[in-house]
Length: 295
Image 1 (tube, helix red, strand yellow):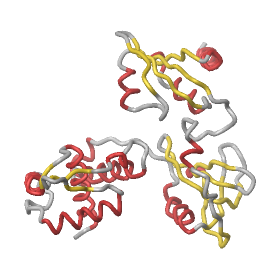
Image 2 (cartoon, one colour):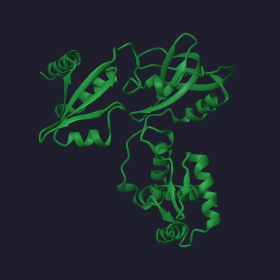
Image 3 (spheres, helix red, strand yellow):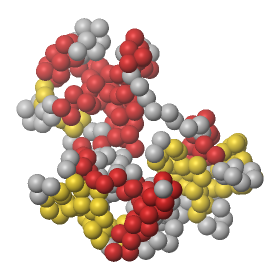
Image 4 (spheres, rainbow, N blue to C red):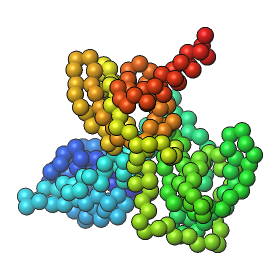
């Protein structure tokens, strides 16, 4: 069986168990047949058990059975919004759906993705094997150069892949679409056991990390913008404070770097910074600069 077909079956099982939390094998098999997952053939117990084991290995998703022989996902938190497993599931789900809809390609419009994906495989291999990489790099408007770095982690932000690395003196972020070449070296590296890439980015929005102080931020979202923030929070610390007919206030605790300021400006007048005052003033300054460009 082709890998694409097997992946499609894994994805179907996960998404079905997310929609119908507790179902028997007979109920699963009937939905399997109704959705023509395997050309109308029923889901056998042996196939289900094989898929169940593979799903655990690939996604870390545990499919358990209760005392009434109903199956369910016992660790749904593994598919939280910011997890690798959730991203993999989402990506494979979209790929599977699009593969089945090739005849509609003119009616499915995607966003452009910058270059750089060709280096993902080499970088991931370096991370797995603990090898430093030799990277050819050229920032916008600057001379190109080569540098050897220790690849710590990858992060996807606004459709661009970024590499978090250690240069031997400090941490550095590199955009894969600015890379001109990447190759493995024979130099080994070991990421410190107490270093967590998730924690490194936890206080920031985006990939820009600097010494911007932590801030308690209150944002006011007007109209339907509140619903957008509820369904796709700007940051893990986001929480809702109060709501009215006109607006909803949200609180966040992070370092408001340029990435975060740019995100706020992209939402025009539907988001207002209530506090802190210095962040509000930074937004006012940026808005004044924008206004002058249009005068």
